[in-house]
Length: 211
Image 1 (cartoon, rainbow, N blue to C red):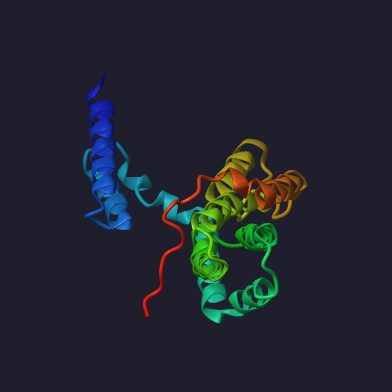
Image 2: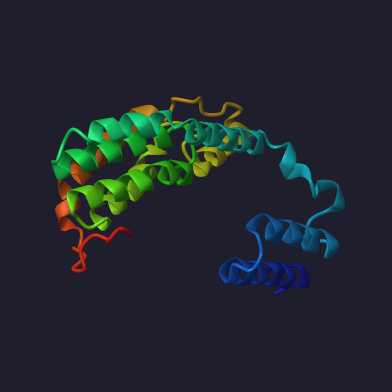
């Protein structure tokens, strides 16, 4: 193993330790790792900030802004609450929640969509006197498969598009992934709408709200 290789592994190991400890912000850890790589010569000085010129960074930042705007507006949350308030069927409730999360995840980060729908799912579970786990796990799966429908659905889609552009000179367009991602998402949502019965039940029951 050469010295640069050893330094690279050391920086990566330290990053993993800092990420796992959760004592420092992730962006700060990444920035410090970049500085360390530059100081040790692993990354040439003229290429230290080359990654910030990548359009993927701008797209991800734009998606985060869009996600925040949708969450703050409360429009989606209000519509879903009205729909769920008119049904007591667990399958319908989970199907509506999962489909909504999947559809929104196609255009915003899955963490943001979960942040919008998790409180709704928990309140629905409390109202229906069912364990929240029956609603939360399908939400997680729905947000993952929903991100496969568009180019901006997940970070890996954007990275693959960038690699394709470098190799073939042509990136993926926004809906190039939809013919594969949409059927996958539909099948996933339909399965979760009935497959929630396979989720282990919480024997303690739904959480009790404070009086």
